[in-house]
Each structure stands twice: as structure tokens, then as C-alpha cells.
Length: 98
Image (cartoon, rainbow, N blue to C red):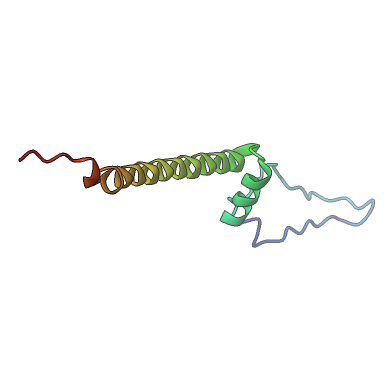
């Protein structure tokens, strides 16, 4: 039974009554559900990299930063090429030989 769906009821006999009642139990680790995107973004904002979800947040932050850096480099290289093509190649410095 899922821990979110059930209730455990333990019955015990009256005090000083003889009985053959017994039960077995075990303790298992609790794995919390994965964090939502908003919770991961909050972890990135406060730079909390602890645990499995912290590692996910760190990977997301690194990928976003890398993509942003690549986009910036592409934008700057395109801007530089456009400036060289349209601004630096003027006809004023050209000498025509007749």
C-alpha cells in the first residue's frame, strides 16, 4: 500500500489479558517525490546544491548558463560581421584607376 493512500491501524489487547496477537513490521527509507520546476528554480536562486534534487538544480543551472553564453557569443560574432560588412567597407577609401 502506498504511504499516501493508507492508514495503519494497530490493535492491541486489554491490559493484562493473555493473547497470541503479534504482528511484523519493517522500516524502510522514505524517498521524497521529485521537486517541481519552481522548487528547483528556488534552489538555484539560493544556490542549494545538496542532495539528488540539488544536483539536478546544479545541472540545470550549468546548462542554462552554457546556452546563454553560447547565444551571447553567436550574437556578438554576428554583430561584428555585420559591422565589418556595412560600416568598414565604404567606397570613400577606394581608388579607381582609369
